Image (cartoon, rainbow, N blue to C red; front, side, top):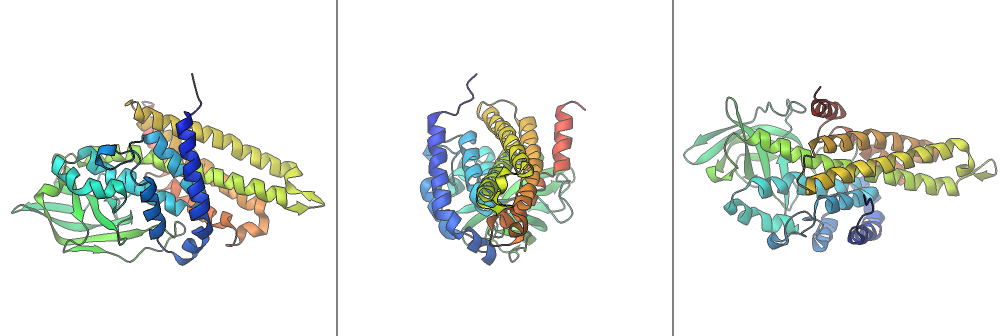
Length: 377
């Protein structure tokens, strides 16, 4: 059993880390403070192939795999979670459904710009009254004269309202006991996009409420067979949980790195605080959970790349990194003391950004339900 990553994966990590530290880190605090979407960073990431890592080269992607993609999300989140989730949501939620379930015509229309990062895509699942109960959407789509007439709303949708967003794929009831997915292009009459929502964290990420009022979408924008939307989005969520787990891993690594540097530099009672047992134990606990989290995330990604069942592994990885990253950022603020509570220190931003990792792509409670079902309970 070889647990070492191939050299090309570590080389790729070094490239992404260098980009994150040299291009994102210097402006991360500014982006967060101004709630400003990082258009320039997205353009640069597109140039590096980071917006289409797991997609085939023949359609403009980087030709990588899920593990490579998870490493990229981990390294980007280590510096700025807003950038990390922009890549994750675009890749796993926005573009992947079209790649997996789209017709040849749909793939030809949407994928070239999406996998190249020239445009962004979003996925509209959550509604004001349907969060964890994702299989009970109130948004409806009725087929009339070659068009779907869509009425309803979606909430907390990432990447849906930027200047470069091209489309959102939404779940909708197309019959009483039938859910389907439909691609809605941005700019379609009747499709309304709210102003950016104000959030606790992820301030540089685009998050909106979407409304549909007699929004007419061509019949050909149905994604896959009619009535298959529920099975489709469950598969999409399974893959998306790997990227959110990778974000949790990057968050833990950031908390550890910042805490270690601070503990080495900060002196109290005539010596660095790293010499105190309480601080050492906190850093040791972080290190243990990072190692465990990395093994879980990479295994889930590897299973997916091997074409083996991975839903259980993805849920386990997401639950662990969500809970463990909460402990890590809390310990990191404690190590920083009063300075950890000040916004000029990056741990403050990381602390705020972490919480949603226990909510998005399925709450901790939903992950436990998924895991329990996987155990046959």
